[in-house]
Image (cartoon, rainbow, N blue to C red; front, side):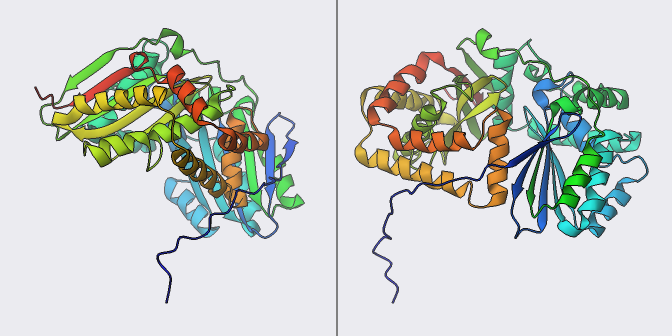
Length: 426
């Protein structure tokens, strides 16, 4: 009979050694980082382009341009492109984030010589078509109409509006008219400005042989040079704490968000901050979960994160709460900030957070593919596998006293902007 009462033995964390990827450079300056796995004949291929929403001259042109790229081959229709990928067993997706656009392709090794040149053609010589653009914009407009009725979407819009208002188009609140100014010409211009060798990095994982390396080189050396993406303005320089409240009388819940400028990705205290952030608001047993959910029942869940925007970053805490508990929930967040500044976490709590973070870190690199995906995020900010070692070291060395000191430094209630969207209750 299985013993379901005795917990498994908890083992101490052992050291880990990550194999650095093999770097190489194309003649146009694009770097390729190869993660070798001789047992993986399903090749994972990523092209990362510094062309995210923060760099767009018009709202939503980045996601529109690169989503349209997927169906803009110079000699094939959208259906023929889909048939091509299906025939060769390729799964191709393009996603747009704030900083980067990422093209991810998953393909059998035996078909790489067919698929990789085709992907390069899409990147280098897209043929954007009016009917495809019309269908995509229609879909985006319907999605915007749906999302604009959600309070959590509105607080996110207001978050970046307060941070970047007037500095870049990304700080503008999205409106229906923003879709009307996106044209084939503006898309082609944006593609030409951003899809250049200076803005691109390539990552490949699997059983990559010399034939595939040569194929990548011949296909992607054709990407032209232009100029690198511009430096982003520092929104934190103009940030000032404020209270933003919008009354939505028909709302069933109220979305709340607390936000403030945070540390750049590469700042010396960033990894220590992550520990404090996790303990405070970023896992199932966090201080805010215990207070707002377990103790008071204000919400099903609350969490925090950091949005990295170039050299800037924004720390935010968000949740959806009962309409009549919004102010109480906000004050509970501030109460927990004050408590963490004065009361050291217990040894038991520190061990719980430490084990949770170490376990999550190990799961994030439990295979060559997941290692590549995480490495590419470190590489976004000029870091490598040593950043992971530093992260593990910071987790293991963190003390309760350091947690309190960081809370004093970064969790001062009067440093936060508070955003509240929902039904106001007197």
